[in-house]
Structures are given as structure tokens and as C-alpha cells.
Image (cartoon, rainbow, N blue to C red; front, side):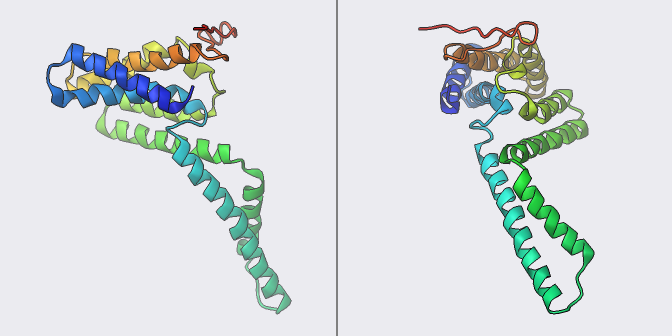
Length: 214
């Protein structure tokens, strides 16, 4: 299911939670935003609406590495032909850049960039002494490297997401944030269960995909 669909479903879940938990309209955006974000997070294990911009950045990095390396090799070749001194470090660096551009897949670079965001969250959570934020950072670091619709699309993630939401709930001092976050995450799994590929709810204990046809 497309990221925009998950986003819309998550936002609807958040709106319902806001209506249930708070009569203050100024707090509604918190519930909607948290549920919508949670609804997108399972797809951090693959290209998604959350990582589409990062995918574009990774493509640029790969292109810069490849063409920048080739350009520098051309400069080094010119220096060699004209008898001018060549820095071994520069020559090695240009070759390394070309190799990176040729061998590194855009997905690998994208995953590394997503993980870098996770590292920042871990650092921020440690500095703020907010364990839930550190936990979210660890999730963001690991998720991009997992198989799509694998561990992030399982029932085991729901208590973890509730725990992360509980920390945020205590930080924001808003009732129901933990449950809202978990429902947002659950909405993604439920929606993907309606697709032909289904969801491996009990992975890795059971590799069977559960699917429902409407």
C-alpha cells in the first residue's frame, strides 16, 4: 500500500484519538501527527514516503562520487602526461570515489543516511536523558537494513511502539499518546494485510503471510 494511503489512515486514527482523549483543539495536531508518523514507520525497512527525499539525496551522492572521481582521474592523467607531480593520496582517493560510484547501490546509501538520522536521535535522546527517544533512534538505525515487510511488520513491534509512545506521553504530559502511537503503527499492518502480499504478523516464528480480501 502506498505511503500516502498509510499517512491518511494514520491521520484519521490520530483525529479519532484526539476527539476521544482531549477536548482542546490546540492539542489535536499532536495526536494526528504522532499517529500519522507511526503509520509510516513500518516502511522504514524500504523505500517509503519517509525516505523518498533521502533516496534522491543518495542518488546525487552516488553520481557525485562517480563523476567527481572520473574528473579527478582525468586531472591526474593530465598531470602525469605533462610530467607534473601527482599526490598518491589524491590518486587513491579519486579511484576510491569511482569504485564507490560504481559499486554502491543507491539503496545502501539511502539506508546509511536513514541510519545517520537514527544516530542523531540516539545522541539527542542520550543528551536529554529521554530513553524513548534513544529507543526510537535505535529503531531508525536498524530498520532500513531489514527485509521489507519483515520484522517491522510484525505483532512484536506493537508493544515496543507502545513503550516508545509512553515515554513521549510522559514527556508531553498528554493522555493517550502511547495508545495513539500504537494504533497508528497497527493501522499500517492492518492496511497491508488487505494487500495481495499480506503481512507476516508472527515473523520470524511463522513465515506465513496473513492476508484478507475485501
